[in-house]
Image (cartoon, rainbow, N blue to C red; front, top):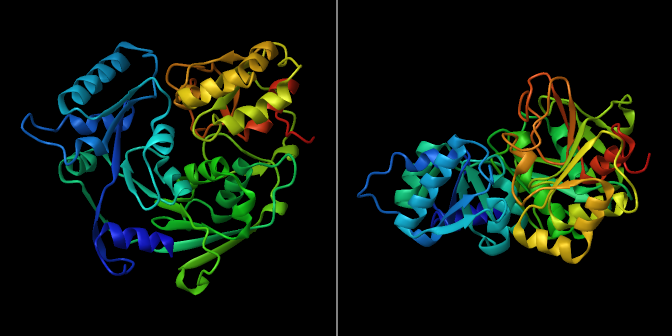
Length: 391
């Protein structure tokens, strides 16, 4: 199992026994302007970091700052990065994606405080989420102590049908596994179906595995696996996956998009870790090209990083979005962060290609957030109601 191999190497052990406490070396950790920024508040002036070039500070959530409080946090992070001479990214896009683009490699261990730490499994690495106080200690020691997790096999076979995307795949996994069965475990994605998915597909899939309760994920292309070594196994035929939508407030209700009643939508967002990559933008632009978004519907698009933004400009995607009536935002978390951009009012409905749909996340407590693929979001923007691509 690749997951155990990565953990064993990071812990300098020959093998891993599930349930036993292990101490593993950290390759990179992230401090951003979301929850993890408080991790540096407890550092004393004399404290040193374990490795300045393995600590990444990224201002990526509330960019540009949408409040005095956000500006104060960002000022604190700039001061910290300057003092310790860490890696620093300001306004260049979402930290996880920047790390995928620039730093992480197979076998690495990543630590952060956000919900998308499993995203690095797409590169054959492993990411773990910790609380800010735990991150404080890791910043000083370079090690994280965990109980060695059990590994769950999730096997993909077959090939996706037209109009079905990687976001639908991970939503199908969440729907079948639920939010408790995989709690505290690591998902290892395997199978011939992986060969029919792109790296960006795998990024989307890994970024949302935390919704199953799993603590991490890793993609393993090894075709000679011993299935008996896993604690549990799930199998998915990609050809049987359909366009799915997550209903508001949690991930407990995931339904086929074409079974929903005709729900009028006020705002559509395409962006975030699971919806703002170049592949996502290409899909949305293909659907929107030469058309206009529905009357009085607001559509926001946010490329995930500066590199993706530039590529979208070069390919003419930004022009397509603007011509269709979209508002193109700066690179970053944007509406998926839900604190300053794209706020929705009382009883409004947002369809998001991002990941967060909790009550009050992007505005009013009575507003509703549905999660979908970028394709379903783009079709919804054209029709004004939730609608999959092939409806």
